[in-house]
Amino acid sequence: MSRKLEGKIALVTGGSRGIGAAIAKRLAGDGASVAITYAKDAGAASGVVEAIERNGGKAVAIQADAADAEAVKSAVEKAVATFGRLDVLVNNAGTAIPKRFEDTTLEELNRVIDINVRGVFVATQAALKHMNDGGRIIMIGSCVGERVLTPGLVPYSATKGAVKMFTQGLSREVGNRGITVNNVQPGPIDTDLNPAAGDWAVPQKAATALGRYGQVEEVAALVAFIAGPDRISPEGTLPSTAAPTHNGRGGRRIGSAAGLGRPDGPDPLPLVVVPLSCCRVVRHSASSMFPFTSPDPFSAMSKKRRSVCFVLRERPPW
Image (cartoon, rainbow, N blue to C red; front, side):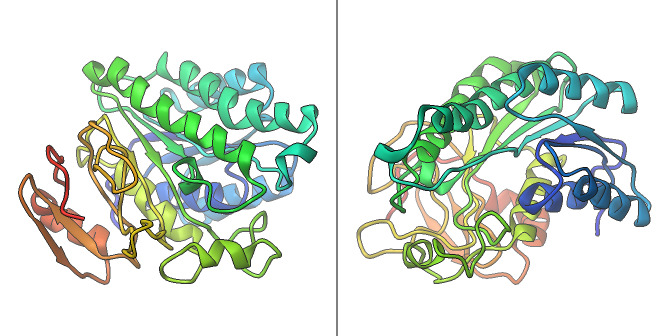
């Protein structure tokens, strides 16, 4: 594994399990010193730290419920105090309460909003005070922030749509400081909160083109790429869906983003597309699209990023 993040300091919220734990381990494997936050499970958080340290990395776990604004701000300060600065923030902490919207209580709505939206705002605001040129702010959104694919996820989808717009707006405020802001939007990912064998798996799989859940390591690989030194458009929403959704016109959505002029609605923002490993890696330019396959798209991007990471200025041909 490369050490492209050697000397960098990263904070991953909700890093004790699932996608967050995989991201923390991957960033550490790439050379970063990593702080993770956790809400309650100190044992799981310690396990992530120990796994990183066994592989020669540096890590610290900080207790902070993402719904507690003061705890989130304190966690950022503790991470900076421990490692001296902050280069990468991954806003991963999130929650969903799957049920019909009309049956959802006000308390449940408040918790989803507090964690998924306000927690992201608070962590980002605190982190920006410590970030300099080359900083990376990475949101873990969701494909349902673009389109509600599964009944019962209405409030969750709304919060992820808010994160998407927050990403686009913030990127314009901090881009002149050399700080990039991107939103990774996974499809269904196999975690303990959303297991591939769970009750909600069937309708989620049905909405994908590949008929399977993605793996946490796939999301982590994309986050590591964005966190690295290769420049990404600061205006981007980068969806990473290991199980890409249909585009509603019989085609496969292998790497769509706000700004790509999707069939389901145009958006003028120029963005970069980086799909995950089980999707085709697609080269986009202003006038053409040249697909090619690779067993390791991120390696291909590293070697051929002048061809792969294009900023779109025109509508792609799907």
